[in-house]
Length: 202
Image 1 (cartoon, one colour):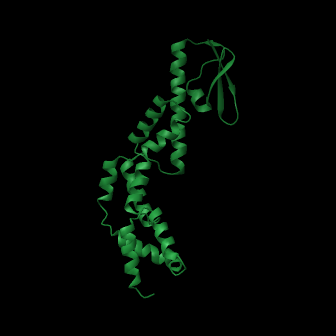
Image 2 (cartoon, rainbow, N blue to C red):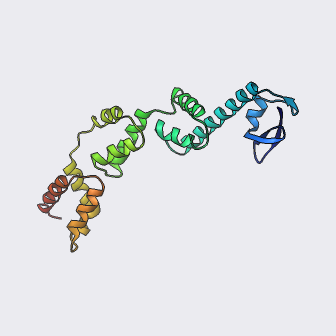
Image 3 (cartoon, helix red, strand yellow):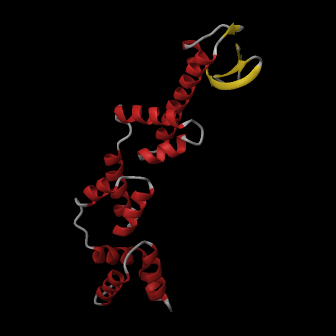
């Protein structure tokens, strides 16, 4: 097979085999692995080069995704698999774990804090959000064990801050109950909180 390259937009470089497009990489990679146009390359050499290109692509994708927000290991791998092969995705993810840029325990701790403190989610809803992101149940359990939670008090504060005016409307109680259930709170805890609120003077 005869290998050639063409400059693309920005820093892209397109690799051709026997004058047919094969794969795209970037100028930095190509300068590090440069092969003169018209050189002959065998199947093993091509597979080795292709593996290196895909690994570099996976590393770049990791950097891009993580620059936008933190991810769990599973979240990041799922996104990588949309554009790279599994071997490259696994290698890139492992590299970022080793470098300390991927840490499910740290990610879970930050997520749980945000969901409780900002989103005011229930315990069940928080668990679901963690599991949805592929965080191991043992990690979720360990992080949640650090919280001493009173779900009824959480609901009371949430209602006072967000739903108090709605309670005063016709059919408001049912609407508030439904809204709180969608957040994952149990009917028992909701009723206990609303009954506690009935005793308050505002």
